[in-house]
Image (cartoon, rainbow, N blue to C red):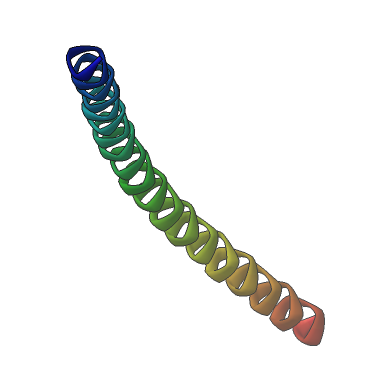
Length: 69
């Protein structure tokens, strides 16, 4: 009886270890994905700012043409 309980405990511990390993790998993948998404977001924010600046410059030029004309 004690041997059976010990084996069951060992099996549970083995499953917990496997689950911890799985969660560790998944956590690492998620952190890598997060870092990738943060880089992509930063690039998109930069492109958006550049586009906004260009549009503002075009609007300013068009307004100056309208005033001159």
